Length: 50
Image (cartoon, rainbow, N blue to C red):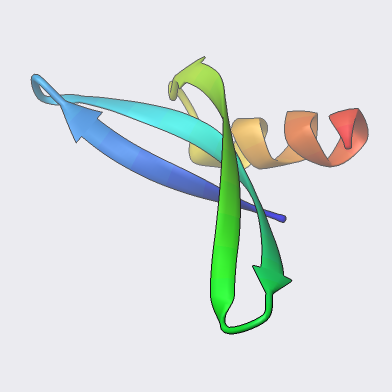
């Protein structure tokens, strides 16, 4: 599990990514966390949420 970031229209968004190996394939499941105001704060909030 990790946090990935996307930039859309000059705004950064955070998403939680769960990855799981299925044979040779890697399946990823994304959960949108919303607009990222502070990367450090986002990480702390998600570590408590998981």
